[in-house]
Image (tube, rainbow, N blue to C red):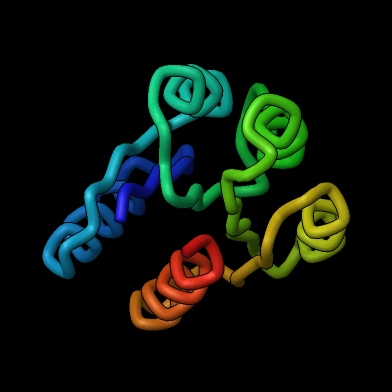
Length: 120
């Protein structure tokens, strides 16, 4: 499964990348909304894991732009407790779901597998 993870926290990106790669996922990361949009334009992904709160283009704006160019791409939002309303807006804008940070790796993997099985 080819995943794009978007988060402005570099430690989080490294940790998630290592854990997902050990479980057989192919992972590409982006540390900003701008970089995420560039990656989505460059290649196809099976799913995107997208942080809501980021400087510059936030996760909701990235989601809205992604859904215009690649509406079939499943997007799973990550959010802190303070931005649950933003996550709900994201679901209304086309995200498949949202998870609260810090997200247990097994919960993330389970959701990604559910997303993949829906696409097939």
